[in-house]
Image (cartoon, rainbow, N blue to C red; front, side):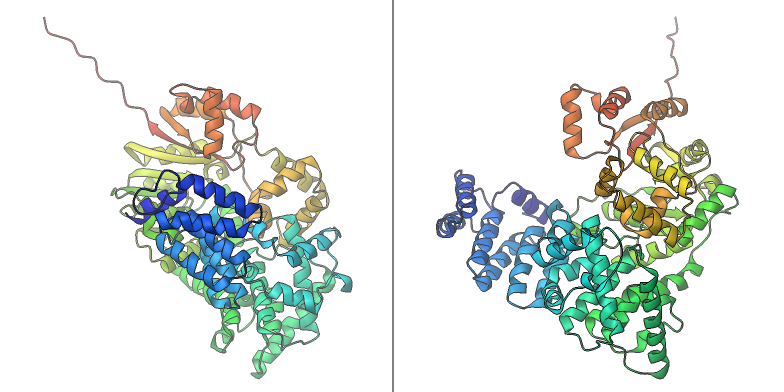
Length: 609
């Protein structure tokens, strides 16, 4: 049984090898009920019955490990979870659970390795923010911080030594801060106050912080880099952070030792690669947690800056709107992604071995191209974008992953007609609506498509972006500019009014709200078109294209099927228009769909008499 089969078996609650007795599911249900009632001994006995019949039964192993944890037997729990991971090394819950036991055993490196794996695997489809807030110290401080809607960092807002120690002991929090963008207003208040605490410690020149606390503060600085310094701050904070930056530069020029707390405090307000002589930070010896911060904020950005000159240009960029869009994405490359879940699954993904030529039109920072390359390892992929900083980021991430089937280049979609190539598949997700004339972009891409080729498109929905339109009206009314300060000011205005219906859903669902480049793309884009399903239908009819269906989650598709049963319903744009009218947030991310050119009508034939 291969890894895909083991994963599928585990998802069904079956053993990984061989057929389980028919009553396995019943025993598991009884064990879960006993565990939920706090009857650990009967739950453990039931799990052992299951494993006597099916030794590699993943849910049984996982539940037994959790029971061992609840009984304080963490060493036994580690061995049980290890057995589960031997049956399926791609189970996020088992990685999270074994990490929790390692943390309780004070084996922080082992805990961190498994927490990172769980995060990379997507935490079983659950939100990382919910896991972060399971720490009662984090949840309590976040609650206290959120009660003050301002951004001050008065002394009463700081964490005390005991709170710092409790939070620093949370290995999962540290891994989350290092790994991926954290979202949500509650956590934002927590992070803002945690950064204020770091600033206070650095100003007091507390250089000898415990390693766990220093590691957490360095991880916080990494989170600030990931969100691109979108957190609100006061003028007093920036004055203090600037003073610390000068202190750091002075120590570097003197060759003096720099504490991890000072390094983290500066890096939490300013990217380290922006410092004069930032390369000198690479030559120093740092503890691992500080070296990881240096890698993120110095080594990788300098590598990208050097790489920009090597990126080929396939077309000129001379359209006025294209130039404005290029400037936006050069100032704020988007989207800045850190983890690709497909990479965690590696060769276990359902990859397509077809050899084909694929164009990714508007690849941004490369996550889209990365996904396609992993899913279609035999494909020859050309990924183009208008922004060189975005392309440099994409190239670095691709090199790190060892992917070899993507070529990156700078180009304007409107100029691609002269490329002299054709493609089996073209993907233009989230790009055509940023052209001055989206129809012109459609025509260019369709001209590059081979007969029977597939075009995959993503377009903004008029219905789903009403709150974005309202935010744009607020921007115009108050004169917010697409600068870091202007974006922070807009965000704080929305956060202050976060209980208003127009902002409540946006804050809960718009991931882009929680990073600087995401906010600029969301609210301040220099060119944005929105569309409707009837307009899509008219365009496809005009261009002679067949609609192959929208890409949506399974629950939404099932609701649609129940409302519009029968063959062909999923490709009926009239039905989808009615469905969206009743459910306006259906396409809150985008309309993502695929089309093909219609087959030309067959020539008429006549029998000879």
